[in-house]
Image 1 (cartoon, chains in turn green, yellow):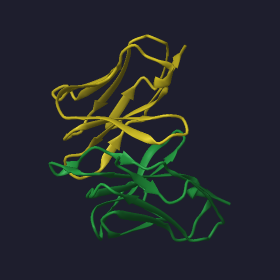
Image 2 (cartoon, helix red, strand yellow; image 1 turned 60 degrees about the vertical axis):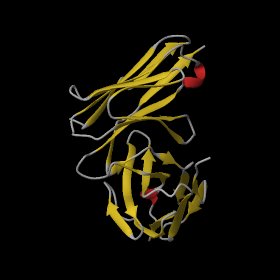
Image 3 (cartoon, helix red, strand yellow; image 1 turned 90 degrees about the vertical axis):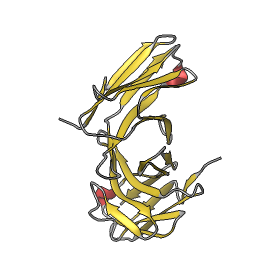
Length: 115
Length: 109
């Protein structure tokens, strides 16, 4: 069974803390994505990666960075967490399909609260 | 105007009814995705299609590339179909997906 695993379902952090969110996929997918989901705003892309060590900014990269040292792992880093980063964070992976995004597989999400 | 638009935003129906959710897009795309999200749950991919029609159980997705329009149909709807349904399309220019706002579906018993 294909799987995208996010390291933590729920996190509570304090303002200014460094936060790591990890995502691992076991499907050998090229593409990996980090989204945040907020009520009324839908899914917004933070960063995506189409290969190891490759990354591209999404729609809302400010305040975030990412790391993809291995194909199966894509990490999202909040260098200094702020209260406006309280959100649900969703990781997804997909194969390339003719050069574009194939079927998407999502993790269960990580709900981050920044106090 | 959003590049991917869904309608309706909210839909409430009785069990057994035939459901249609629409998605229109204005960008050039390679394929269109339909996904489902249950309350408090993760997101599950339902379909990815670039032409014609696909069927999985009671769910049917169609796409008309010329008209830039896709529909998701649910036959014999059931309360467990209650969820948010989202369409998304990748731009042909890059990998980025453009997301619809979602349709919240409630099926009453």
